[in-house]
Image (cartoon, rainbow, N blue to C red; front, side, top):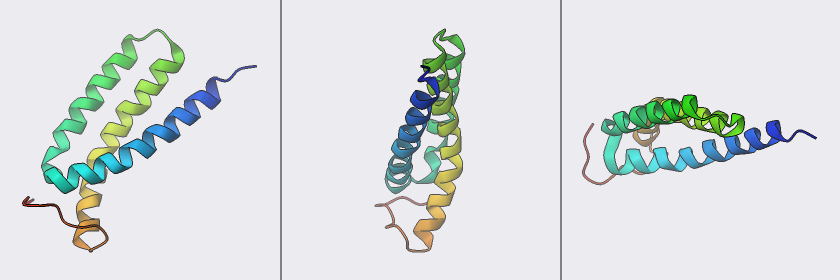
Length: 95
């Protein structure tokens, strides 16, 4: 039996689930100006993914990298959701 697909699928599901509240908290406390942190994280996870020999770990690191990149867009979307009143505005930050 090959569990690689199930493991990667579950890891992807968890990574996306973890990034959702991270983006919300990042926008709340830091605003959209923290986009560069997600960029750097994506680059680091992507580089590590290339260097790792283990297929599953490399894949999970790649998913984490691209989830970081996607979070840059989600920060801007979260700002719009805050503007619409769907989420509370953060304390003392202007964007």
